[in-house]
Length: 128
Image (cartoon, rainbow, N blue to C red; front, side):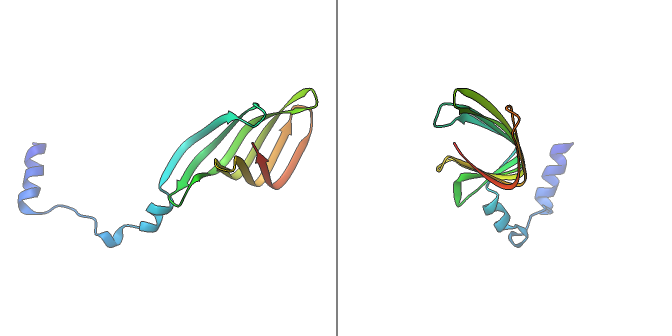
């Protein structure tokens, strides 16, 4: 039955085609790679682990080393003297630059540290 319907549409030339003018090439180029529930983890230059999670992450065609993130959260471990401190971080937006090894967080950035420190700011750059 399905084969007859497909064959019938081929013989009558009633195929549905999307005209090229209806394709938004700007959207295709600027959102080349898009991820849902993106997670990135690794170690910083001191060998301390970090983990970043984003509701969505995307890479643009022209900037493959930068991952643009929305609704960001994560943990970063660091040393302060002989103590290890864990920072729990959230932000509205972020950019993970793999080449420069930086994370730039923007919009309602909140850092809550295991030592009791708290930071509230609109932008924060973390060097990994």
